[in-house]
Figure 1 (cartoon, rainbow, N blue to C red):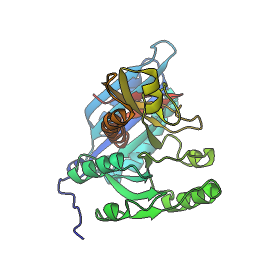
Figure 2: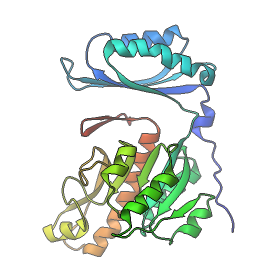
Figure 3: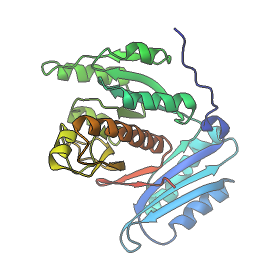
Figure 4: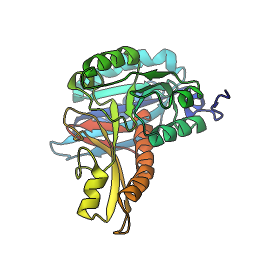
Length: 299
C-alpha cells in the first residue's frame, strides 16, 4: 500500500532557536517590563508578544511571548530555572516551550471520519505542526486508512459492561508522553478518572453551538426548534458533559428547507474547520485556561 508522506517542511524545523512562553497571573504594574527585561538580559529577541487583562485593578493578566535565543535547546533549562524568581514575584502560572519540539497527539474516533480526515490532511500538508502518535478507536473501520499514513491504529472496543477496562487499556496505550488528546467525533463519554490524567489536554468537537443543544442528537433538537443558524463548538473536556472551556465556535445559516440530513451535512463541514482550528491553536500555545473560560491569542 502506498504511504501518504508529509512533504512540507514544518515551522518547528525553521525555528530551531524559538521558544514560546505562556503566563497568567494577578494583574499589576511591571509584569511586561519584568518579563521583557529578563529576556533581554539573557540575549533573547522577542518576535511576538500578546497580552490581555481581565481588569487592570484586581483582575487576571494573560501573556503569550515568542522569542529567539541562540543555542536554545542547551540554554532553556537554565532559563526556566532563573525565570522562577520573576514568576514568584508576580505569582505567575507559566510555562516555556521549545517550538522545535513537536507536540504528540492522540486522536480518538468512532465511526464518523470527517474530523479525523481533516486533521490528517492538515498534518500531511504541514499545516498542523505536530506528531500524530496514534489513533484510538472503538471501531475497526478506519484502521487501513490511518495505517496508510504510517500512524499506529489501536482498536479498543467499548461496551457498557467493559467501559472501565477499555479506559484502562486506553490509558496504557496513550501513556504519559502524549501532549493532547483529540476527540474527533469519539462518541463515548469520558470518565472523570480519565479526564484527571489529561486536565485541559482533551479537546472535543461538539456538533452544536454550545451552550444550546447539549448532549445527544443536537441536529434533531435544532430541527425541532426551527433554528436559522447551526454551529459547532470545540472545547476542553471536563467532568460536566459538554460544559468545558470553549476554544472555538463557528456557524452557518440554514433555512426551513433543510431537513435533519442536510443539517448534518452542513454541520460536518463546520465541525471539521472548528476542530482543526482548536487543535492548531493548542499546539501553538495560543490558549490559556482560566476557570471555565479560555483566552485565545489567535491574531
